[in-house]
Image (cartoon, rainbow, N blue to C red; front, side):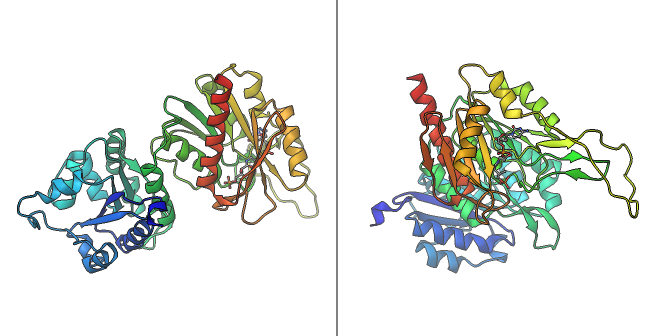
Length: 410
Ligand code: PMT
């Protein structure tokens, strides 16, 4: 039974630092243990202000280490043993301070000393948690870029109400997401290494005047999940996104756009360098023929007519100008006749794959964390995937694309 657990026999070093989110580390620790991992916890002295070591000792059945000079075995050096004896290191929550120390190579407590001794071949993940201003500060972003460039993987912080009551980015990522990232990293696949992937995400906004626009309910979650998953699997990822409340996964190349025309221009500019293109964006099909340069005034008893003209079909423009080696997938957001509509889009847009989702559901499609999609292939094959997180959906879509590309090239 234990042998069938996904993390059976894997040793994880969990670093807990001084953030109010430290209490969530207990949940992470418990979840990793239930998945079979043998978890060792190192806390910073500051973390002790938020949660006691007894919690982690009970969850892991191992002593919890805090002090650099506390050597339980006289013939061993604890920080070297801890750093070099594990399969993965996770720092969750990671404060701005520990990120800065990692970037600078400062080792002034047991955790940061361990982090400096982690071999390059051991995956190192961090899940930052801090106030929005601290996360967005140039120093933190520069430090993040430094450690990511050295191979550290970041489970990006989320958006929400923070402990200080501010609303913004900086909230520790969901425990689910952190645990999934650990599982994914330990069962590592790098089938996208050397492959450049372009993903479109989010809605487009088509202005009516300087203050109003036409848009749709896309949150960007599906496209950003694809970007994060492709990056994790070794791809070089370009994410072209309409306006969303999401933080682009650390490590992707990011182009922000507003309108369909801007998204088309960005896609045409970059598509030539990409091997795989996935159109997950909900592009507005129409825009106002002539947007007003000034705010439109309200007139009592007068109706307002807007003349809408079609936007360019971005994914069709990309298939029309594609190179033979490119694989191009689109999505189909449907509310009815899902299979017929998806098959029509597959043919009319010249796609290699259409991923359909029923956007009339409350647990799939727009603005939720889960999706249930069907893959439609040019030979008529239809593959239904289960309802699962958008990250897991992204993983399954990318696996199918990788398999299709390798069968074409063989
Ligand atoms: O962002 P989320 O909240 O996570 O929601 C995810 C999603 C529902 C947006 C996503 O799963 C999805 O279905 N994306 C495609 C939405 C859409 O616009 O579908 P469509 O059936 O209208 O378009 C078909 C394909 O053509 C899509 O790949 C679309 O990106 C593309 N298209 C559409 C119109 C247009 N002018 N240009 C395009 O490239």
